[in-house]
Length: 182
Image (cartoon, rainbow, N blue to C red; front, side, top):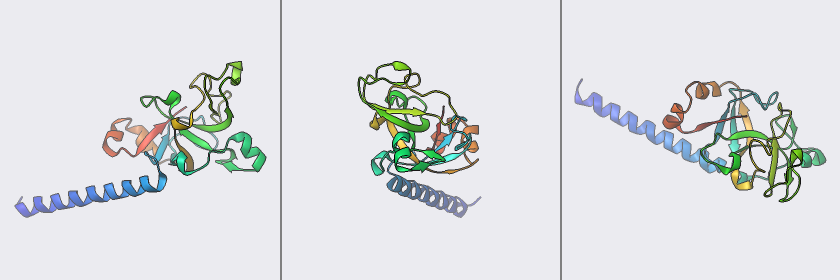
């Protein structure tokens, strides 16, 4: 192979890298969070989200978070039920897989959480639509606003299976789709 082949290949690779960076930057600017989408890993949000769906999220600072409780009062629905669906890091831990669940209500410090446990701090109480119980206090403490990665805005079925099939290795390659579980 001659030098012009390698030069052309290098130019094409550089152009592709620039396009990826521009698209990722625009997505971040529009969404206000990174990642801008997550792959749903479990069936906890059925029938409104399924394993393998990709969900696009918007940064919590760019939108109000409506609880299920308030959603009922103002007739607001998202993904087939009252209230918003959020992606959050349990206990704010960046090393733990994010969870995508519906925001049920807000609890203040010292108030009773599900099961009668006293809330150690203020935050959201969350629950998977398909789950029988709340996330708190078992999976996480009340979700502080700073633990929220984003608010779910749209979903595309099935395309998240690609992300799930390759596990965490693909994250190191493309870095744009994270898994959300529980």
